[in-house]
Amino acid sequence: MAKWTSADMPEMNRKTVLVTGGSSGIGFVAAREMAAAGAHVTLGVRNVAKGRLAAKEMHGSIDVREIDVSDLSSIRDFADAWTGTLDILVNNAGVMDIPLRRTSDGLDMQTATNSFGPFLLTNLLLPKITDRIVWITSQLHRMGHLHTGDLNWESRPYKSRDAYNDSKLQVVLFSLELQRRLEEAGSNVRSVLAHPGIATTALAAHSGANNINRFSFLLNDPAHGALPTLFAATQNVSGNAYVGPDGPGSIKGYPKVRKPGKAGLNAQSASQLWTAVSKRVGVPA
Image (cartoon, rainbow, N blue to C red; front, side):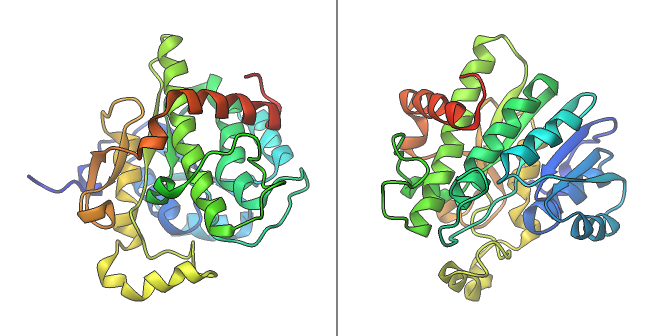
């Protein structure tokens, strides 16, 4: 069976796409390839100057807009300013294994960036989305745990690796609950998941997790790491599909629809998490 690559992407003329964190890593590659396929791509970035430099390396219709997905006010301002429809939202921006730091909203920075922020952005833009939401998660969600009573690391001792794993499990559960709600409403919009395997990006460059990058021959480069995102964004996959590399352990390879961990398929947990995070970020549950 032929391996799926960006050369197999369909034409995306007249499609509108938002990629958060699109100025580097797999977000950059995904944005670049969708723009090359004809989509109008918005790079949602914290650093506009960096975003504009990234856009100069792409070909097609691209604009750059400021958004800090760890900042609830920034997300609301961004969503309020969005006009027209949006075909595809790619919740790509993220951080990994960082020390405890509180945002201006009092949120753990890692949880806010990877989980609460994308959740709020999705909810605010959902009435304008016509095709799908792509949530970028990680195989490390399988090591995550759900603590709905302490999602913000206020009573538990903070552990940066655990915070990352937990935030990626939350993303998997968001997709599960969102897809249930979309189907209940009779919507044709889909919520899907993608993960890059282990890709040699700068995501973990500041942490002990960067040791894995020394074995780059065993890993996906950013171009291959972005393929599951592109597959999830453009192919006719089912709602809540989980797309990752096809190699052993889903570490490296070409896109394949796989299954998330058991905890990511718990509908009751997904519903409870949705309610808890809705309350925390101030959207109707």
